[in-house]
Image (cartoon, rainbow, N blue to C red):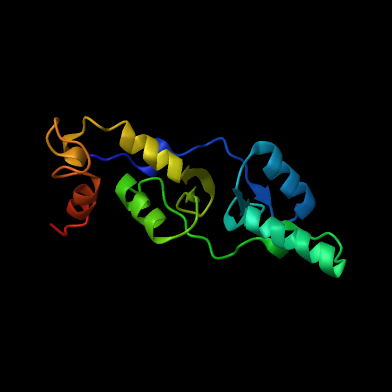
Length: 161
């Protein structure tokens, strides 16, 4: 059975930020776009980090308490970032979200360039749209909470059952 991959469900339209962007400008862009995080890329488009709402809050608090001058995204971005490749399967992405607190995963090509993002919501939509999928939900008349279900499908996908 072919499950959806990151390439099938990723958002290709969300922005990336250059490392050199002023953090205050980046924060305003995040707020206007109603995003909670944006991948930060180098001049070649390769993933360097993520700028999150929490990173922006750190920058604001530092500026308010220390009077620190404006800084670039590079100075506040989260540099330890997990990503997935376009061929990563939906259940593997869901597993990453269950193990980590982040809300989005950058999708990168073989050279580390950001080609999209996958969010928790993208995973939920993909699973919800597959309600008639016997692999995910067992027999067509079964639903989560009955025998089978997404948890069982994840275990089957990882060879645990």
